[in-house]
Amino acid sequence: MLLASDQKKSIIFSSHITSDLERVANKVAILHKGKIQLFDELDAVKENVVKLTIYTDNPLGIVVPNVIKLDQKKDQVQCIVSKLDVQWQNKIEADGAQVVVTPMGLEDIFLEVTA
Image 1: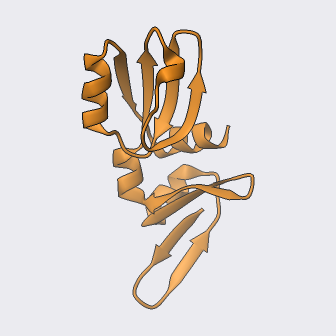
Image 2: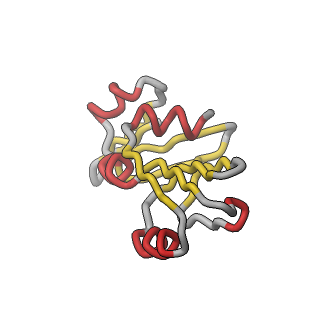
């Protein structure tokens, strides 16, 4: 879903075709099962939302800030965050974890958040 607005009017456009949304939206909301999972300026979403893969001996002890989606496995945590907290990343890496940051496009974000 997207929101295109100026000071007097707003238009809500619902589509799963992200290339259409990127052409006309200034804000996006991603809905999943009737709940808004993500809502922000389009440029902020494309700049800030990233996928993290965290390799650690103790994935259950990891608390990730700004998490949208989280998947814990035996030796890693994969998650989508709305904004990477660099201080948190530095601390967790100093504690021995390896953090791989993967940028995401709007379509990848949509697919991950709604999967």
